[in-house]
Image 1 (cartoon, one colour):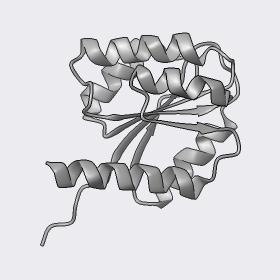
Image 2 (cartoon, one colour):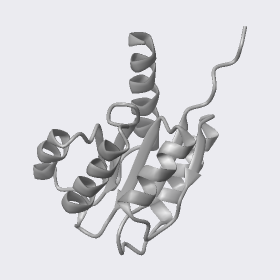
Image 3 (cartoon, one colour):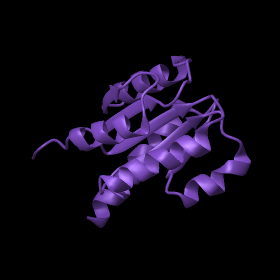
Length: 139
């Protein structure tokens, strides 16, 4: 029996957001859970993230934003993902300072999950694991 390949996770900080302690904690937690994590760092563009996700054949693209620019930046990321014909291939997750009132509009553009500041590491890990398992079962 072959061991399933670990989930490939791309994490990044879009825009001018300059605080990355939280995303580094998440990266470590996901690594400890057996996932293959690439943290691209701060001040990357949506296009750079989509390119890297495509190169790495990512299962998950996770973005951390604390700047309040989540709506325009996630719209740009979704456009970049669509341009690379990756829509539906990777889960798109957003973490950080995200008002509850913005969750619906983010879901409408294709963001699969939103994890505000203070979200449990276990909840994030479980969400990823459950969603990827369900996707695998559907084939």
